[in-house]
Image (tube, rainbow, N blue to C red; front, side, top):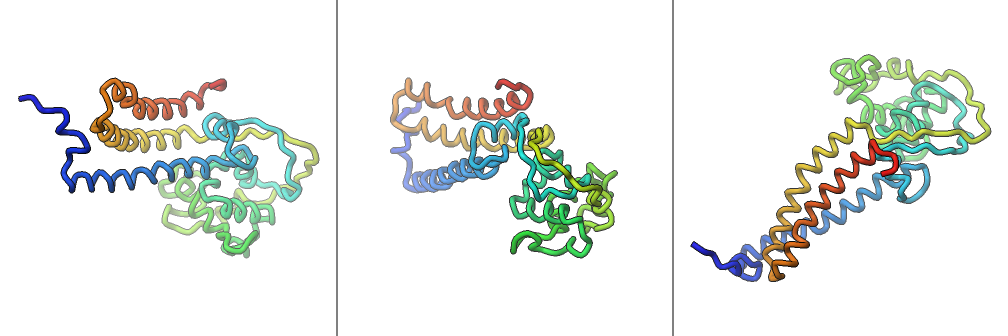
Length: 255
């Protein structure tokens, strides 16, 4: 039995179907805009320079080496401080908490990791979380003695427990005064392969679904088949190219 192709056009849908399609597009459209805004907010300043540029993406997906002048207020060094300042191996996890988390933890570490200030909020600016809260939110998932990936360097007995000062202090204890006056070379680590796998998994299972739905609506328009043949596959190809580029950039320097 043959079906008239015009019967599946948007113009021929019933009123309830048209309303459903309209509401779907009203939700998905702003969703794409917020996705673009998320890229800007998540990746800007990754190269330690304001704004979003090619070096921000290079740092996030491949890693970046650059020379910077040390900040004069970096006067105390400790194992933990070295790990969370720009270029440190744990910096990417601290950055997930945003600028308030970065300010709070680094201010506490540079101030000598004082026990009285461990649970004190607003060390650097009013409204900043306490160092203990930052560690609980950004570190304890891995640094816990019960089931963390870094159980050998625990900050808390379990994932649900509050960070313990004595455990944290083993890494946060000041070791010496930093004496640097000239520029130094920083190697800014990229997103870890583990995190990239997680992001890829989430995107590759969700984005094609919305792309398929929007593409199906596009095929139901009155445009000619040659136009649909050219434009229809482009969103799916764009998703494959986008996600493939993450991995290409991760392992191929010139990419």
